Length: 340
Image 1 (cartoon, rainbow, N blue to C red):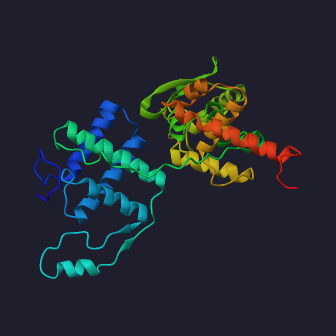
Image 2: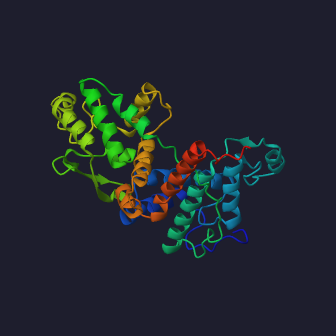
Image 3: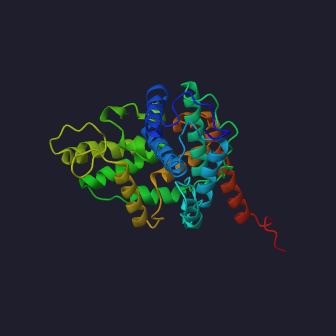
């Protein structure tokens, strides 16, 4: 074993795939992480496995320096030449002459997630006795930039929500879907995962399942209730076409609407309403939060409605509201400009 490698409690040749599967099972069964998070972590670790394979290393045997090199390659978008150990005479020269493999550098936020994934993975390996020393203890990721999310104005929201017109089943579905996402601040996965029984239209309440399958109850506004009632009465039965589907929102074939389908619906109506065609369902969630905060909603109540585990995540909307107030002030106040 190379000097400086972690002390192993498992054979050095142990492949990374079984370790990844065991780790993901732990995250799903004991930590209750969402399917999207599990999928992202799986991709991150398989990418790390490819790096280890190029360097003829095993996951338990990787050092802090090698982990840092992996992250450096991702940040720069370049794989170091000659990463694999030479197999015989002439291999070292050929490796040194090998072209550098270039790709797009990953964003700082993505790199931060990969650091978090590696830390969690190696902590799990140590708990399970696979390693005696955690090489990620000193690992540092890039500072995550604080980017304020895009938010629609009230007038833009009204244009978007008013774009689906007519009494066709798909139009009724789209109107109810957009109204509900904005009324309750839903994530895309939460909206498409709703069951019929989750909407209590008499009490104007919605049960939503967020990250880690955590449930929360969110009020539904009257306009969203009206749009849902119209969809349930005259739209969904025609889309259902005799099937036994229990999901609230259906596609044109009577199956459950997917996240991709929801994105296409939002982007299509955004273009039709003269808004940015790259807008996503999350734009409506951001708008929901910002408009509630501007209307006097307290931060703790907003945190509960958004399903945030940490209040700090919700506080980004206070910064957003402050920025919007500054924009309004400097554009309207006669003596706010620095110009003489």
